Length: 203
Image 1 (cartoon, rainbow, N blue to C red):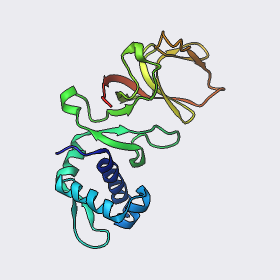
Image 2: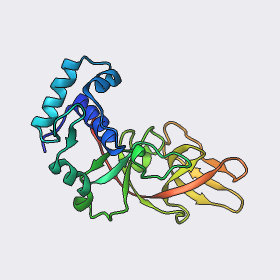
Image 3: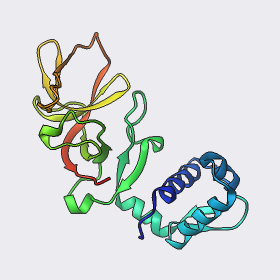
Image 4: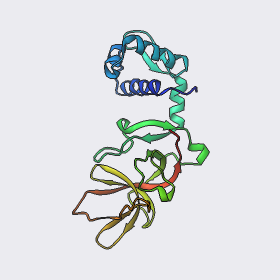
């Protein structure tokens, strides 16, 4: 399918989230959400229809996802925009997009992608904005790179299990990041999964 601009992508995600929640949005609600005129929203919707992402079934709230786009979503692996405590990792509200890399990288159905924020792992080749492929797991072998949830903050670090604590080791010698040592009494810590790959993104 033809690529979308940033504005088109954001509107598609909004339309998609509202449809998935069972409450499709009107054009007026879209305009209010994005602080755009109805004419601007009308034009963006036109591009989404032209590129095959949505169809109009008629009526005030008649926009629906096209069969082609629904099939594309099913083939992709979820890109999680955030990992929040107390919520299912792959809850709809956490999924930002679907990444079409499953077959290319030979990944299993349960893998998801997480966008990296920050430069604490650059020496491991994981840069700010990259996508890491995560294999869900409640624990990992000591010394592996993993996604760890500290209270409600997700972080990607090399994890070492010690006697009474867990060490989260960064990889950025130039910036002098220090290893964090966490005990269960200090923070609610949970292993989300093991990092099994990294995809470089260009912004």
